[in-house]
Image (tube, rainbow, N blue to C red):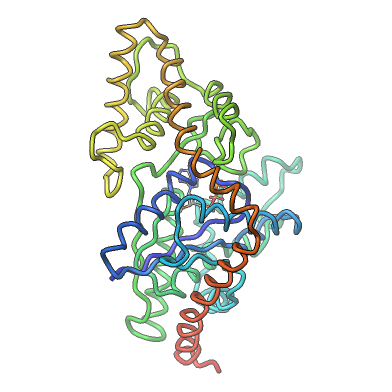
Length: 365
Ligand code: AQP
């Protein structure tokens, strides 16, 4: 059986990229696990959230909001272990041990680190900014992520495309640990990628949709009201061509909207999006383009307007039940607290078992 682990930072309300690239896939995996004995761990990674400057009061709210969100999208705390990483201190203990077998050179090559470094250089008016301005914690971020995964001896990790390099590092570290301390102790985790592995910014379809992008119109949050969704989708970058075509190179804006639409409403019957490959995802986006083109032909509608109206409706419909459930859960802090305890206890049992073996193998107490 598989052991599946994935995490999300409590750094704000998830956007459609987080939802389609990761969270919805978690629910699909949970539902698929009904007929298997796969184990599922989904973690809210508070220790990762403090690698960038953070306000304590805000972090507190966002931690519990994220727990409510995970329940609202349909994760079942009795079928999965849903927990706060920062309630299980073994994560930092294993991270330390892994830090000691990770080379600085390897971390220096991580693209997420390099892009944070580039951003830090851009926003500073001095030319000699370097890694002094970013924290050691941010540099070691992927090692903590490896510790999260390995602590549960996970075999599979569902993530978006931006995390593939980090997952390769987890595999390298598992292998390095096994060679040095105990043969075959950690499985080498594999990634599971969703067909919508990279949702792009609505305003700048060259970059990914991201929580930290300064333009709030670049992302749809899962708590956005129908009016906000409509407004943001209306402002999305498209082009002036009469018909639609899925062409991510030449028509990035239109193609991004088509793939979001196809992910939310798979055009082929019986197609749930589950277990789908990249090929089918492209095909689905093109099928939507064909369907809308037929309507453009018949009615003379503008391609951009029709695509945006259809997408708005699909987003609003997808988000409605999630938002209703989220509202209900936010009013019930007692239940959320209870679910946090449940998750922590389940995670801790496994984490303690792994660490006691790790300490022994490494030669520690
Ligand atoms: N645009 C995206 N498309 C597909 N998947 C995405 N993920 C993030 N953005 C996209 C996936 O979401 C999961 C949670 O990631 P996280 O908690 O690390 O969130 P994040 O990366 O902090 O979210 P952002 O928006 O990317 O924040 P920034 O860019 O501000 O740091 C992961 O599985 C990730 O792959």
